[in-house]
Length: 193
Image (cartoon, rainbow, N blue to C red; front, side):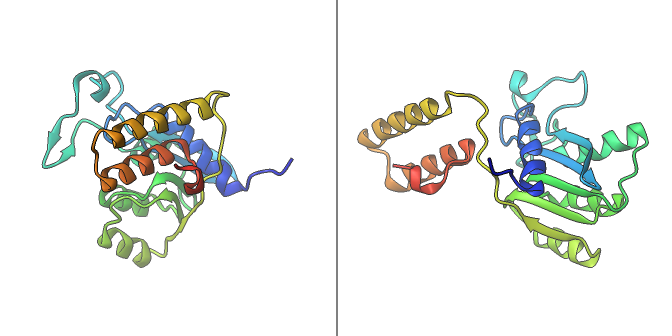
């Protein structure tokens, strides 16, 4: 059996953390690693004990949910809470960090940012990472089976999407739906139909 790479392993941890997200807009996970050891993890959601978006909906101001704390910030705050140094560590995030998280990552002394998916990559965030000498690297996610019925779920969703296409959805809409399904299940594009 071939083992997944360290980068895929830590990114898989971030993907697993994202499954705990209480955000209804985008589930994100982050794992902070030093010397190939996980020192913290976080996902996006409300403050501990607070109202969750999955229960009461998002609290959106200027097209941004102000209720949630981002995954990267939660991981960094976990380090702060327990006195774990982040200087020289690496962070694995399911999506490219937003500008605010970028600034926190720089200030925390993180030396490398691994991310699985581009997500509104802000030009200033990219500049800040470059100015701070922080290396960013996109990591291809390994296909990981969470349960034996993933194939059945994918087939069911594709069947429903085909019915939607038959009822008059545009090709552009259908392409976007298929892309989202494949991202959700980390399916290669060849398996879409």
